[in-house]
Image (cartoon, rainbow, N blue to C red; front, side):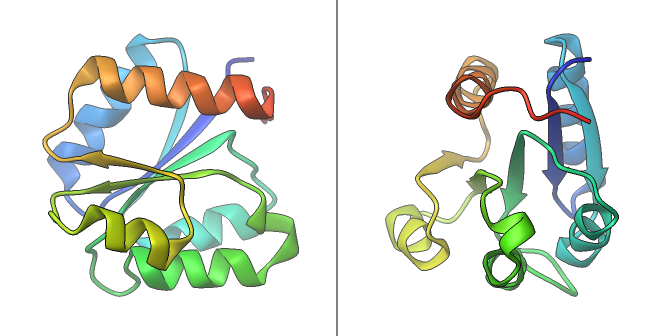
Length: 127
């Protein structure tokens, strides 16, 4: 089975485009429209190899999701790549305790290389 990527973004078109790109690259992709849906997916026992997380979303944004993720020892170790159009990306990285930010609109090659790096670094935890 291929590595699982969880794409969390409230923009339906972008979420589906990201999923299509990652599927084309051989990943298994699950999507969530916001942080609450992502937490529900993760708390259902699913463990993606990496989470691609939007910053600004209704109901539960990137910061709220990340705070909940870090509070849960079972989820805290799943790597997160922040996806944002916000120009204050360095501030966001520090606030969310993430190491990588991809700026929207994102370049396909950068996206794929980043996801592959995290999967290689953490091993394939796909389920």
